[in-house]
Length: 557
Image (cartoon, rainbow, N blue to C red; front, side, top):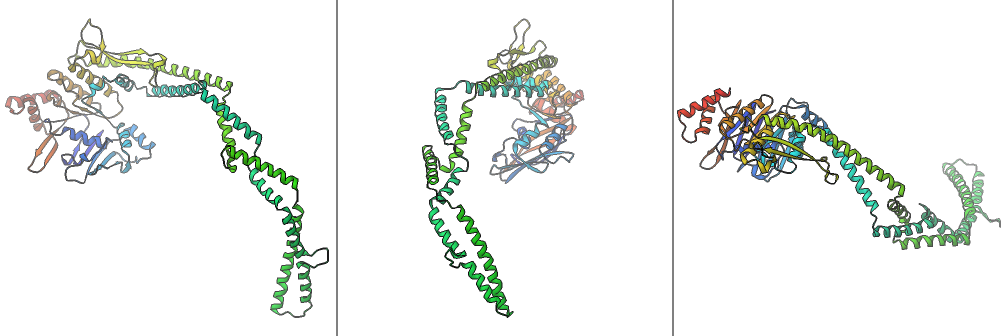
């Protein structure tokens, strides 16, 4: 539940710290006093949109933090996203600058506004004064019933089955409805791929051919130069000495000198190394010359193969070195266009199986909804007598949809119907119920659905608008009963509702010569009496009004 709310430099509030307890708390004050400021500040901490208007005039930033006791669901949320979870509380904090920039924090760690909003959904629910208008929206009955029913796993299964079926159906339709443009594309692609297949280009063939062509084209000059180098190194058949023999003879001449002078020894070592290297160079040249082949026929073959490759590359407007990759890409594209009949039949079978899976899970969901609808109707009607709606009947109506109207939400058309007068047919909520009836029916639905929620804190923002007198008192008792199970906060103008609270906050506006402040304070018992008297009697508060206010508090206890 919400333990503490700290507000700094927000709107008309300079500094405010509020402590909340378990049970029912009410927030009251004159119209325009700033009750919406309190909810607006809390909304910022919960991840609502921020703007520069949130910052108090003259301040550079606004800061709001809300402290909650952690629920099991909220702790699981923190652990999944690796936020700090070793504290006894969860602190949501929001800082908004005067330029309109905002920063969010969860337990001290920076977070996005979407994360704040996601986590706050595990901690608190806000029921606004316009909830009865939302009930008239097309999908509101379905979302309300599904939230109340508690079958989220089945909803997820239906949604997954629907998406899988739709994706497979779209793919089947795309492949089955082959257009003339697609056929022409496949025909052209088939022709291009067949050309590339006939070329039979290897992945590294072009590079190897270019290297071989270079050797073949220059074979004669390479052979002549190699032979001259070989002759210079090793000599030739005319007994002309090469470098190897000359180095050997030079070593023999040095060996004949009987002197171990260091420079002479160094010359011997260098000549020995040179002789060895020259000998090895000669053998390498010999092996190389054995491989040099003057082969005009092979050169012609390589020329022709290179010409074929470059011609094909020009035709396909590709770099010759990209031709092989282009061929593989075209093969892949053709295979995707040429899905075999067998594959098409397999896809048709898969679509049929996925459709059946969706039908099965949707029927199971319908059964769950029917059970939840019966319970919801019964529980909502139990509050009608309390709210002065004793003869009104509330009906959650489920009608089957055909396959063309099915969606990820299943195959049910869900409406809220009411019968306001016995003997008259039930009709849609927005067409049959009056404005006052609609607001009270909405409140009954909110109270029933709130009793089944997983969160520990709920805020009702003037949801009792449009009711008064004995009905308002009964609504207040209902809120107080709900507060016995979880924390309930209610913004109200009804003294009958405010009297039922366990904790009472008053919002007031203080105007000075230069600035206006909004003050929010928790009321003592005597102060509560005065506030209730103000709500009952208006400007002039009499002793009789005060006595009535005291009596309301006594009766509430």
